[in-house]
Image 1 (cartoon, chains in turn blue, green):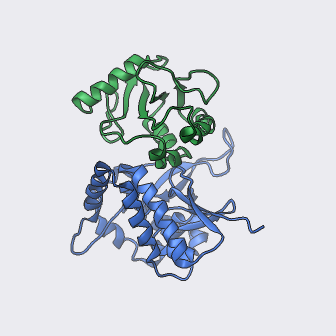
Image 2 (cartoon, one colour; image 1 turned 120 degrees about the vertical axis):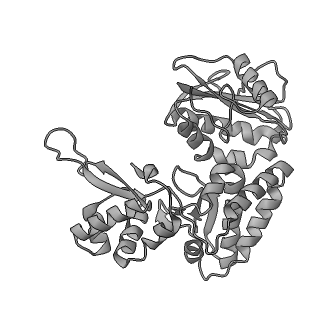
Image 3 (spheres, one colour; image 1 turned 90 degrees about the vertical axis):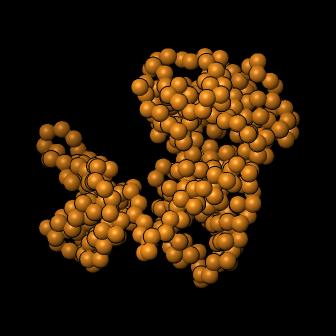
Length: 217
Length: 145
């Protein structure tokens, strides 16, 4: 994958690249898969032709929104298995745009460091739980989608494809993941969702929280 | 080069006491996840009984974890991106708060098994001089020279 050498990030340009509806549809399709996607699959997923899809996918790579690589999609190797196809996945780089400029990320990093120095983890978790309880939404998946978690169903649980706090979580994983769990507990209480329990079930590349469905019997 | 990591924690009560029982019971499953994790190389064990913690001359309440990994990412994924994270989240139930660094990393040649004394000396070095190429942390990481 070659997403880290795309030069100086231009967040406004990157976000602007999503204004084109075809590009937006292709981005949403690839980002929503959670695995590498070939050109044919992306084209049919977005409902456009293969040539058009290829053009826009490469524009999304240039903008730093997707990463491209090559892989044999058939799963076969050796002679006769064909040459590797170009595949795409969402870039790990994040683009934050605020007009006028605001920098809440640095503030969050500083506050997280202060919380750990003061040993205030429990207070931070309690505050996160209250923030979740104040949320207004009719149901859990909607509340999660609105907050950028990108929920999907797998293995009898609701899993979250995206960590909305990724940069801060990389810096202070234990604090931020514990706060995230508390926030999700608050969300469940706020929407009155019965029968699901948030728990930590971290995996590489995803949010640390999953919602297991409780047994009804 | 491989990445060695040592971390210490001060138990709130002796390892055999009821307050710590839940943590000791979790050692078996957590060690299994560690030993099966991609990039895992070696871990200091007292015996094959996972409830037996590493014995050492640094005080009865000090718990020591000492392991070797292929890459930063493999160690990171075990520590923070596996069920191990849940036990870190609950660490205050079993361990006292540490005011000084409690975890240190350094690079070793592949195939070399470091001594516990070396590990403790690296932790002392980190505490005395801050992070550097000989003793560092995830936050102030140093690539091999």
